[in-house]
View 1 (cartoon, rainbow, N blue to C red):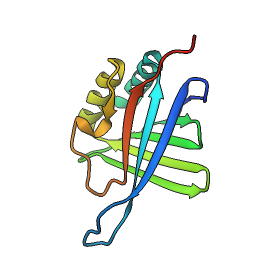
View 2 (view 1 turned 90 degrees about the vertical axis):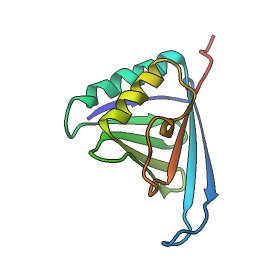
View 3 (view 1 turned 90 degrees about the horizontal axis):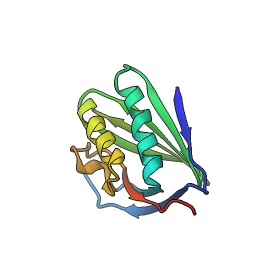
Length: 140
């Protein structure tokens, strides 16, 4: 499995947890994670995502500060963004995206897009995490 690791020296990450309205299945918690990387780091991630785009069953693991790990996978059908919080200071998200969604995400990350990764294609209503990207100034 391919992997990238970001540290506090080159990444800012923040999470926000909120209670969402009750559905037929009951209420649920939703997480928004905001990731700040330099333009070069976003381009590096876009290139790494390109490596999984053409390999069925492959995935990319990205490790971020504050105990965040995000797995990127290709899936048929709608995209799904899930997060689990297995330990007090550990977050594990899986972004299972369609091929077309991944292509749009890669293009956006490479060009410095700031905003929600769900902006390019519908994400399943079952998803429980929103991923926001933002540019971070490069360290001097």
